[in-house]
Image (cartoon, rainbow over all chains, first blue to last red; front, side):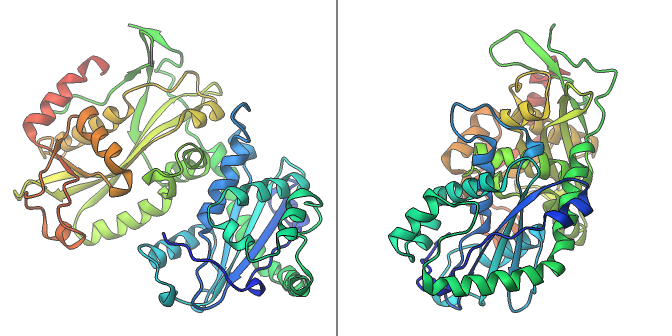
Length: 226
Length: 221
């Protein structure tokens, strides 16, 4: 899929928010979440959220070549929330459906269907928020399209945000800082509506892990030679 | 003739085998796959065609579209034993039953819509008792052939190697499964022509070939 640069820095915002309390209430697990939110204006494409999810999961499962694979049960849970003219929001599966239907094939700049924005929420019960932030930052760096977005920001911002204070905030430049703050405030209110879908997926994730069928007792469970 | 599903698969580089369990799947299995296996597929082979699949959605969508066309969708799962007494997903295949034959005849066949194998990392993470076995692709095709026999389709099976899989996927189907590649000039169904026509990446198993392929795996039944 062709990806085009986001030329307007004002269209980008990113931040951290916490829905820890509600996550625990709804899932019985303590967790932290990290939300990154970005948007595109009409005529501009948006980074494929599946690329972000893939990169985050890939890094979490295998941070580097020498590390043993991590257990899937601790995999950060990535949830999308997209906003468009026709869909106020979609949960993960719905987003995939919408995304596949709308954006497959060659993308032409002047045919971008509608202005919208996407919020990725990454939940993880096992790691600290600073680690999630680092993970996300490193992941985004490995996603082909994100350096394009970062290139819309001053180089110093990129270095600052990657090097330090990752668990506090993105170090957005001043003009974007106000936009960022207002968006985060709005976002915190919107989370009231958003949480139900997030937690439904989180519950499903738990259920799925424990829903594997029993291995048939009549079959051998260890390797053997004929 | 249906001879029953495979019961074991060989392990790489050894004389050993492990038992597998072949069974019909449900939407629960697709959710399990999406939650537990799919992230490892994304991590292990991000460019592969199956890296962006959501099996639970694919199953729901396929049931809707196939039923509208008078066909049935079935899902089959391959499991191996886990160290926690659970059956660990090893492979999954989604079939369209009653699909028009790809060789131009009116006979129905089993069309192999989607198939995937779990990466080694998933088996390790989920607690499989052994290494990843070999011949999973052959086993998934055999599931399709046996199902075709069961339905009275004489083993007819078709599939399309998605172009995103490139030459590697084409060669894998051709050389490992020994399915027959349909040449570009072979006529395919009207519906298939609507979605792109014969791009030279269709594979076909006729009754004679399916019997030969089935017989070649009898030592694993």
